[in-house]
Image (cartoon, rainbow, N blue to C red):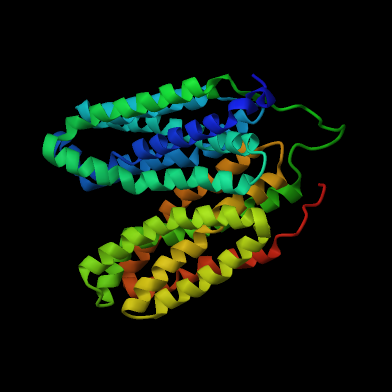
Length: 389
């Protein structure tokens, strides 16, 4: 069905896409919290557990640009419905797997569904929204952001009581979500890219390639800081004489500030302009980061939470600005600035940990201001309008 014919039920379709996104991100995050149970069951080492997590991140995020590139020519809504069931099957049934290498294959295949859903789901959300497209996209991102802390909050108590095999039953709500998506009509939507390429026009100019690289650096820098804080934040705060309980609350608030910042970034981007929000995000985020890394006590706690909020104001604007650079490849654009930086941020956190082993956590944290400065420089370089190149 053409996108215009789907506008009659667009509200229900968008809602169903949001529901699907929640379960995509929920299923992507149910395995890492219970890897210690897989350790007991499969006798796997800490390093092997890390590889399982790395496989999930790689196949769920790093492959998004590739999927986006191949789906830009034709976006099929039915892929969204299939993706929810697909990831649910592989992640939930992973609980009954008795071989480490089969587990790796399962989480990798399941992760691919996330790489399919994110660029397609965000593209359809934008195309189905008449006005306030930034608010719609940020709402899409917020739903996924809420699923990330929800996964361990649900999975850990259940597995503690009923054991690892209880994950199989978590497939049921995902199936219901897919049914809701089906009856909303999202599976009928097809968007085909019309070829309007002029003679002699290159698919992607050097100008656009350069700016795509720079735009990817913005969320990558932010994700390096975020992954480092989430991974080492509690240890960092305890070294600054912050109690363990307060450090735990701070990391929780840090995570919940992310979807809140994402929502307001899209909301105000529709009204004030996406580049303006990007500038505000960079400046206020940098100030919060500097204070967090060079302060002590409760000020560190407050600044870490504000840093998360301010930096995440840039999530939606970055997607829109990148899509405006390559308007015929919106799925690719979303994958480049949303999926790929997540994987790169994880690698950055590994490097952070290696440096911290050598010079200490508190000293290393101050070096996180370097990617922040790089990010701000790129933000101020972004032109008001892209050149036709």
